[in-house]
Length: 275
Image (cartoon, rainbow, N blue to C red):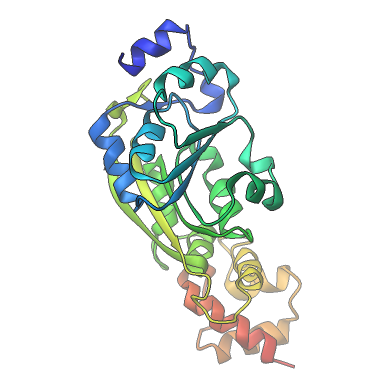
């Protein structure tokens, strides 16, 4: 039975508040699983099982799938749509409210995250795993195209912001494919894209990237202000901020959006070395 028929069978009502726009094309779903680099030995954590269409595609490729959702009205739908997927478990809990310890207990071991999510939880979800102690190898998300462009943006471009630099501190992000709005049910008002972020825990050696991320947030405190003024506003001493910026090789009137993740690591080192 087609997924739309299953949804109709159980009188499922799409909830706009949960950003429920489901993908149904089998070829696209398999392509997303392939983009995520899912292999037969992997454990995959899916955020937002929805009607189970992506879940099935992941199940066909992975050793194990743990799919999270918060909408319990999907229980009968998923029971039917995931029939035969013996390597799949659906957990009705909010991942953003689970501790690392709770997720470790549920998942156990290394995993990859794959999700088709509403744009308003993109940043919280990505950072939930990027900043955690969990053994997560990658996050692959299908999100609003505009948000996807921000995640992969390079320094100095209009799309570049704090989230771009923060993601780059922890790994490498790239858009793997664009997904037109007509591929979703119901059809949303925007196009989407698939972004894959591969985490590299030692990308900057033993540098404390969480501290560098705090520096990035300070640098973008007010986008129209210079890096120097934002650092001062964040509590850095004027002389220390000025000297560190100059030692890092930047003009004191430079703005935060001109610095790459590597630049912020360098600036962080200089701030720590200035007396």
